[in-house]
Length: 423
Image (cartoon, rainbow, N blue to C red; front, top):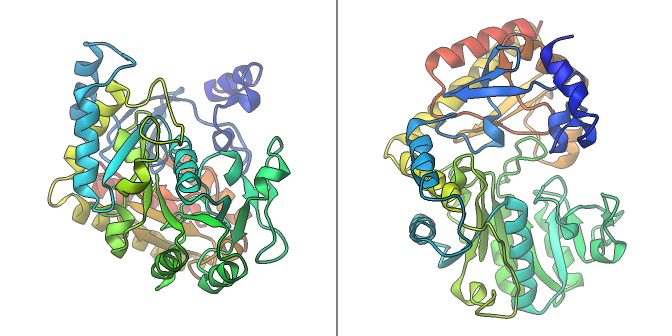
């Protein structure tokens, strides 16, 4: 038994399933997870000393690569002054100012410690601002593990949701309406049936938690128009897409201004920081200015903010996204060609530094199409790539990420590994 297996066996005795976040357990792909000792640039090394080209990137934050010297230095310098104060710091203002300068939709920002906390706060703000209770979310989109969002679809377009997790009261789930992603007609029909009941629509502008699914032309624009018509708050959950797909996030890529935005991952550079921001009139409803309560002992933690500022400075370089996009497109094109040569049914797509791999004849546009992909074939591919030193997300339903540290040689080595894995 290798050290990874030994550690996993040990962990399962005192940590539920041996992990502190479910997908890490490898339940969907089988086998034992790799316990990571260190990372540098585009690489990870596990507890047995094996090196991997990493396309998980801490699930998105490591856009400049692991242990980037500028980011590490910023954290070290901040840590030397103290780890946490429970009081305001100038760094918090700098990060908030930078986010508002980058995204025209942000007039005010509140920092939090996690993406889940940010989306929970955004929903509470929307309800407090509108005085309404109902929410619309989309099937296959994940917005953290808040009770209102752990909901699966019912049998009809306006059927109230049912809890998809034990511990979520049906009364809370019943306030959430779950509709098909990319189905604007379903959204319009829902508003017609409940024109004065819906506080907010929350959407991943590019879905990343049912693999990567892009919005159809007109879908996001249609959501904006419907929210304007019915005075509903439009929330873009950009925890994953924020500064990952475009210098102004997905909202800049599609030229749409949401009312509220949630951010995370990249803005912390690998440290736990997230944010909710948007229109001043909505944000001023948050405590202590307004009646919507939100708080966090570690919100705006100086180490996390320092890491985020250092990361965003690197991401803000003029040619950063052009090169990142080129590298990701090269990876996707190479994998598609390798699959074609092997006669494997496969498709792939990318946006900025985010990509999706699908064992399906064409790129999916909905949750139903994603679920029709060949999961068993993905699982075999995943393990074959892992054996050859390529670390992909351990699930057929997760997006992948390229960093600025991925070299031409890394991309070429990944494609070479894929040629063997497709056999």
